[in-house]
Amino acid sequence: MKVVLQRVTEASVKVEEKITGAIKNGLLVLLGIEDSDNENDIQWLSNKIVGLRIFNDGNGVMNLSVKDTGGDILLVSQFTLHASTKKGNRPSYIKASKAETAIPLYEKMIRQLSSDLGKDIHTGIFGADMKVSLLNDGPVTIIIDTKNKE
Image 1: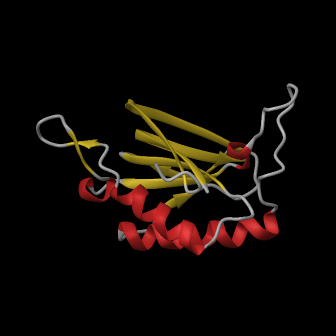
Image 2: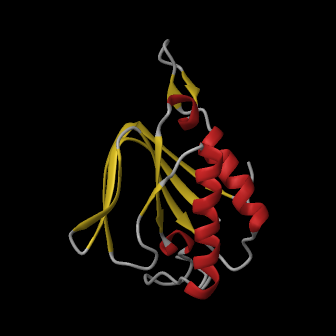
């Protein structure tokens, strides 16, 4: 699994002009799933997302997690995170899982994030043409790949 996390003061996702998910302070999480991903990836990644200390404390130091601040999470599926640009100018998405594999993992990630955060998270609609809006705070943007746990 691969994610791009963005600390936001607001974010929303629309499908066909209807807002399907919106948050104020928290994290916008763009999630890419590949065939080799499994429940261990979900648990590790969810714990990392919820516990990552990238929010400012009272001294202006990034020392608090989204859970510490009572923030929200907006999760949006994004197969293009697995784009390969090695050859030519047209990306290949061969590593991105097809819907029949990815949807159950995406749904498990929603449940795991909700459990770890202690409240419901907001989402887009898997596979839909989504319009994502955000106000990046900082800006703080972090990439995490469960296959490369640095």
